[in-house]
Picture (cartoon, rainbow, N blue to C red):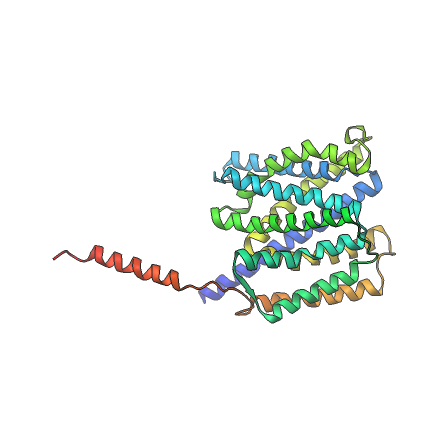
Amino acid sequence: MAPASKADKKAAVDAAAWTFNVVTSVGIIIVNKALMANYDFSYATTLTGLHFATTTLLAFVLRWLGYIQASHLPFPELLKFVFFANFSIVGMNVSLMWNSVGFYQIAKLSMIPVSCLLEVLFDKIRYSRDTKLSIVVVLLGVGVCTITDVSVNAKGFIAAFIAVWSTSLQQYYVHYLQRKYSLSSFNLLGHTAPAQAATLLLVGPFLDYWLTNRRVYAYNYNIVSVMFIILSCTIAVGTNLSQFICIGRFTAVSFQVLGHMKTILVLIMGFFFFGREGLNLQVILGMVIAVVGMIWYGNASTKPGGKERWSISLPTSRQQKHSSLSESSEHDPKA
């Protein structure tokens, strides 16, 4: 009875984590889209810096109140994470500017196989045939409903390449750091958010000016636009935290595969809030295919052998045997 209850509790927490991530991610996309489309606030990198500054402030308050325990993350590890994370943000923004929307979506989809490759190389993960096929179905479905025009140029391809690999490495590193240093999601976020906020707020205005030819300081701020910026920053705290929770509880691959549910929900929400031209038979067909693939992936990856480590456990067993022998020799009285 106890194992079943424990499994049910884990499933409930997993579902809550995914729901939290989906709701906050879709919410921030809708708010940011309204902010940029209706109020012409097109400073994406600076806005992301404000998101991390808000997250830093909350983490500081929670640590001061005693809700977050002190923890340690080596500076070289923090430096690598911030490097990957900031290149991910900048790379995505530049990729969207230099590429067609279709190629930008292809680049985003390619993060799944790249994340799979990282898990195979570094974590020795082996995927079953059904798990691989389910990932292909998800890629096909999301591709059908999001990819339209596709045009490629050299500098756009380089930007997309940097964005894909830095994003995949950043998401892999979230899981790696939490596991290696026994950090909670908020502990890790408390270490990384200040560094990201500082660097993005420093670089963001210059990068946004380069991308839009407009200065963030010259923007005509008003009460409504400021309220939208505050709302975006508030939701971003939940988005950042839920991303770390989900990747920490699962893996970067699962986060990418099941995370495309957010893409589908954004398309549906965009249909209701921003007009009906984006939803047609092709998009609906792609959504159905993607959902089928996600359900298949969730089922296949949790089956025995669906997704498991293939590293040999013999050295571990020998080490355990050696330690048990040494313990017995310590407890045996000397002759």
